[in-house]
Amino acid sequence: MEPKIICFSPTGGGEKIAKAIRQGLSCNGIDNMEPYIFVIPVYGGHMPKIAKERFGNVHGTDSRPAILVAVYGNRAFENALVELEAFVRGHGFNPIAAGAFVCEHSYSTAETPIAAGRPDTDDLKDAEAFGISVKEKILAGDLTPINAADLQDEPSPETSVKNFSSFIKEYMRQQEDNPRTYIPELDKDLCSGCGTCIEACPAEAIREDFSIDASRCVLCCACVKSCPANARSFKSPFARPLSENFSVRKSPRWILNSFL
Image (cartoon, rainbow, N blue to C red):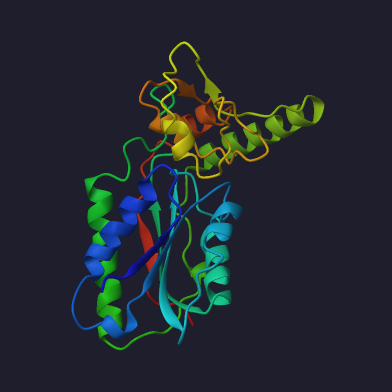
């Protein structure tokens, strides 16, 4: 019996991390307390509402151990793990480890790369090492809970943070003066009508005529990245400032014990 993965991963990066962690966990001797691996993407520093909805029917018994994982686009994971911790505790799980891993940002493109190609081989090796460490903790009989707030973001260059903060302020000002909704666009000349984007959309936001319901779209860009004809694109105003200010590679981080 393998550790169970509870994962919301629209573009697949989080799923790859989850499987690598499970590979590290795989062994005999922890069958009675197989942990659940909860994996979420970070949306604006938070656990996505849609992930909470997807995980809503998952409940633990006997304080089943849980491993918390947030994947983010090389900027920051902020409050996402703390929110995931509160969620799993509320559903009867005991969080015994937490980790944050970088995956290619949803808004990443060839022109504005943001953690492009991640998780890469090194990331997956680190994820497997994390799994091994959790396995060793369980085999030692240690199921003490962690405090996700103890895991801190790797600092970004101060100039980058200031630049991005300035961009956010200007963006918010423009939205107040002239509100605009950004959603993925479709090039009808390239679209073959295959329906891959409809199947890939986790929010069921794409209609039969391939238009997008903006009220349902979560901007995960699964439709963009899955389209075999490259007919989908998303011109986010956040892409360039993210690419320009957060190009310095961040490393995976995790905790197995909380600070007292």
